[in-house]
Amino acid sequence: MERNITAICGKINELAQKHPFGKLQEIRKKALDLSRMKTRKIFSEQTIFEEEKYAFHSGGRRELQFNIGFEGKLLRYGFAFSFEPSFSLPNPNILYSQVLKLNALISENPAFFGQFEMWEYKYGERSENHPVRQITADDLTSHSFVFIGRLKKEWTFEHILETFDDLLEIYIEVINKNELPIRSFIPKEDFKFKKRKYQLPETRHISVIEREVSIKIRHSEMQEKLYKILSDEYGEDNVSYENRQGKNRIDIVVNAYGHNYFYEVKTASSARACIREGFGQLMEYAYYPDKNRAEKLIIVGEYKLDSDTEKYLQYLNTHFSLRLSYLQVKM
Image (cartoon, rainbow, N blue to C red; front, side):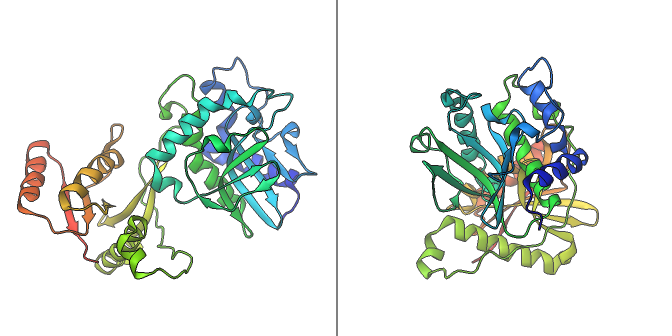
């Protein structure tokens, strides 16, 4: 694998032109209301540090930065905040408003951030990798560095660019001073069914107690069971696991005879509660801002649909012309 960070950044600059991420400097100019672009390059000579083996995007010192670098034999890629004072950033406190926005997005999009890892450097000491969480006051010491993204021994340029594409909308929402809608920065492609197979998580022992009480474990196992049920019914090639929709990922999408069915898995305490939690998500996935992407919307829960909640669904479908249903998956 390539170990020269300058060469890696040069290749990313070249290949990014076919990706939404390739328009980063144009996006920065619009979002930050800059008078001009200093460069069209994503990574420039001033932001690539070959000796230290890392780089961040040009302009990234004073904002949430796209960051890439080697940690031993592993390559990290994602985005970061650096709270190290420097000539270009004498007062890291100016980053706090962006941290607040990012924290809100982490809270609002747990499934999206669940695909990444997070770690911190404080005074040269590196934390262990851990699931993405909100950045705390303890993380905001001067000389600290907070990273969210991926750390891989085996990587490809395409995967790096796909990761940066995935993070681009989050970046825009964090730095956007003009409060313009995301589609004004990135032309939105209509929803596309893209086959994504179920990826088994890293093997570890899960105790009976964890399986019974952990919402996260329960959700993953329900999603896995649903994937297998739908694969048997429609064929594995027609079932996509966590199909991307903007910065969101739909739990399961079925391509049934040219029509998309969106499934959202919920672990709430009743069918009614599952519908309450999943309804808004499915509506956004299917219709936001002004297109119909799904033939059917299905909320999936562990509990039986009671008669009153069944009447509620019938009422919604009749009076608002929805195609919303509930599916029980017993664990």
